[in-house]
Length: 379
Image 1 (cartoon, helix red, strand yellow):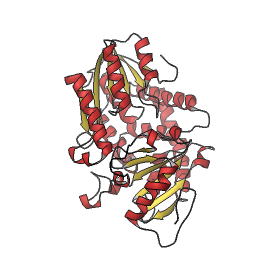
Image 2 (cartoon, rainbow, N blue to C red):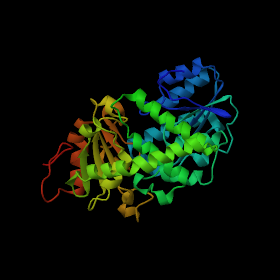
Image 3 (spheres, helix red, strand yellow):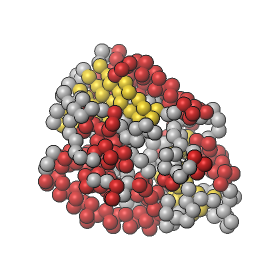
Image 4 (cartoon, one colour):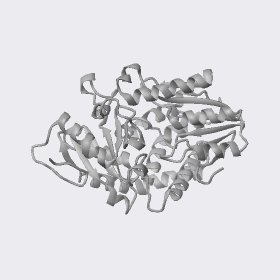
């Protein structure tokens, strides 16, 4: 298989963690076909154009394909063009695979762990492909029959708002996974290959730990104990530099910081959410799913946990970032905007300046004192 993909060789199965921000592409499909696999399982894999392409090509080559995911969107979301697109891909995949596909909504399944049975794909004939995050890993583990008490609860928390993934809400294993992944911080200073290798190491140690390997446990625990506290304090100090650019909207440019040291977006925005009146965080960053299409910089918007659908105290308190995107906008990396759910949105600088930033200013109103920083937009 291609050296650009994650490889995890597991007892009772095979797991391939997708390369971050690449998803399923022709390179990955070609590697699967070259590997001689007969059965492929896609877990925690959003129904997108690349997913449909992969399912079709694998089926054309007579491979058997299974699909388990929780990124479908409810019917009421179809007022947004991006939601109609996702639902279209979902229906296409389900039409191709029949009862071998189960694609649900995050509202019904906060994580994907509940969408597989323990050991359902334990036979080593299955190649298991999963999203390279905590939920993807835990779902893949359950699929091959490797579980621990509290796994589903951990996955539900870890795939939800970052600010709610606190130590008291996670098992020891869940906390070690969260903190060790956070320490990577998407650091691009040594290149994507180095980042992938480090992430792969964490995944492998986690699997060994769950199987009783004390040395793997100690390594993860040592990282958490000796490094995470200092790292989290640095994220807090960085977050305190954010400036309010509209009422309740805080922005921070971390492109310079990312060239120096790892920056974990989840930990950073958790501290940004603690700023007075914060409802939305805007982080200008040099990595992410859109950056490669947008000159190496993307704006990542996140709704604070207290205003996200399912977490806000009432429907009236919910904020849906898709409302900042013009109706029937072609939402795609090529168009400079990615917005497939209510609480995340990524955009290129031009789209921020022309569309998204002004929409937030209209929606939330200007701050009393005009603030201008590198992240944008005092007017």
